[in-house]
Length: 166
Length: 166
Image (tube, rainbow over all chains, first blue to last red; front, side):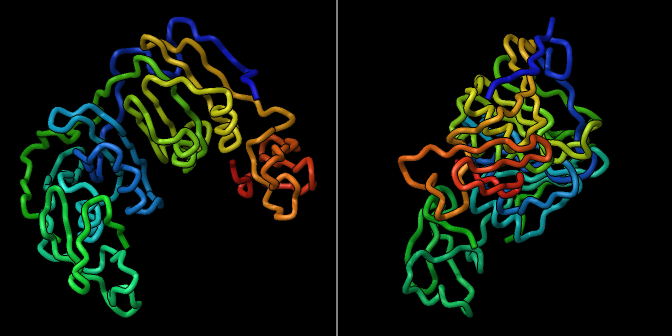
């Protein structure tokens, strides 16, 4: 499989970026999730589902002054529900959320993990009662960063990497 | 789970975009994959694997003059192998590839699907010989757009949505 309609471009003109920086449209309305742990953006997208009404811009592996590498997601025409924010905080506890309206940041926050997380995390212990369909899982946040949670029912303790979201 | 460290932002200052357009760094070296069918970018990323050395920028659901909605992927410090380009062409036959060096587009091409695709597509027919571990699958491209391929061995015909990449 080879490229047949190849077309050499003189002087970098055309659709590709040809300058040290390019202009992209800013978000008129929507949400910016910044300072996501590097590599976590695609997991965050799967939490949000993939039915987006507007454009979504994702930056992976970006240089960050605070952390070594970070991801960022900009979602047009969508504000997140508290449950979505909570799920994302479990994936990336230091993420910051900015709500944009009419090109302005009208609200910016870092969600704080609550002491108890209900119905968000699956207990990996197969004999734990919380895996019965009628039980809502319940985890206590032992430590926010690095994240550690403990199942209220069987007391199984989970590190961040072991957490599987429902 | 609620946002506790909320911080209202006056006048849209801060890290969020506050103007009608924002500047982002252009690609110094790497590959831009443009005109991907809307919604196909994440599938393309999974084809490329997720171990990227540099930054990756992904635009989903962008307005396109040619198609209604398109996706775009910019990959820093990586040029694609012919096999990767072939896989992406099977996902999104009208994708265009631009190779960037020193901020300039040095090469731009639309891959053309070959008449025969070897070792890229899995035959969904469980009794097809090509599912034996020692056989390399082989599909004939019956029609490029909308894509239709036919298994060389069992003659099972597949539409684009039915194609599963190896």
